[in-house]
Length: 151
Ligand SMILES: [Cu+2]
Image (cartoon, rainbow, N blue to C red; front, side, top):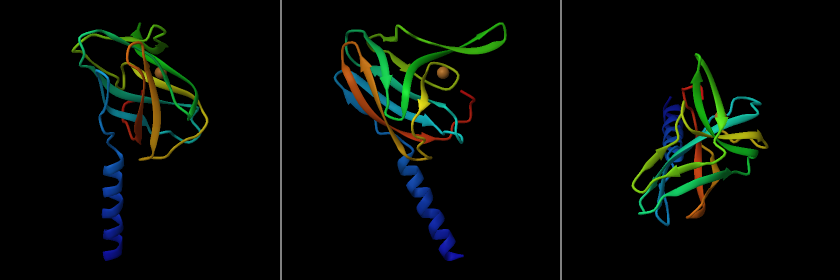
């Protein structure tokens, strides 16, 4: 019984440590709350999220995302049209105005990681490379977490 409790505490602690990405600052950008949706079984794709703040005085544009765990990654937006939910790629990326925070979240704009080549488990970290028009490429680590919303 005592052993069981100790193991539980250790695993909870390890989980808590791994489940929050440290904020990353790069040039005038602050990227926080990066996370990857838990991958179910052999699912071919998953989603990732983050919030991006532009602390500079000029607009920047998130152009693309890449990761080693997926052969194809896109910036997607979720839309409800005629009661049907669908998503499409934002091929022009996302403009982040000075002082603005863009929040990628379930049900909204998200990163779509497709054609997965590996499927990291809960709490593991995934390297995401975000490329911006002005600030260049920023590498962030995003833990795999359970996310309740469907997309
Ligand atoms: Cu998507």
